[in-house]
Image (cartoon, rainbow, N blue to C red; front, side):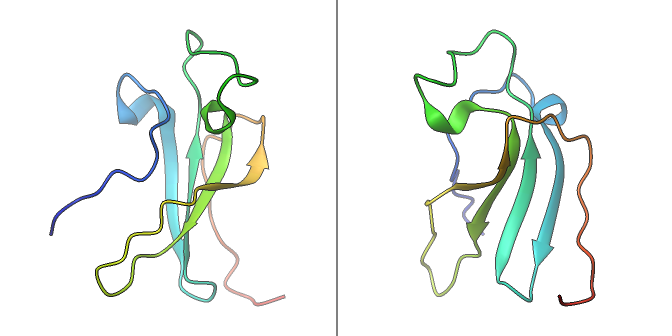
Length: 87
């Protein structure tokens, strides 16, 4: 019930910069596509401010994982989905 922001990447409005969110219950992770604003600090200065698909483990038992990682970097993704077939 109490939302916690896990990613401090810059955005003006989430509708323009987070273009897709998906939960993968098989791996217990959430993925979201992020497009960095054109006016942001260069990616070399802050590594998590680059466009790409980000991921983090789902919260469990009042613990929120804030270790945001990139699934893929330096791409502008407009949508995201997961294949239900395990590979």
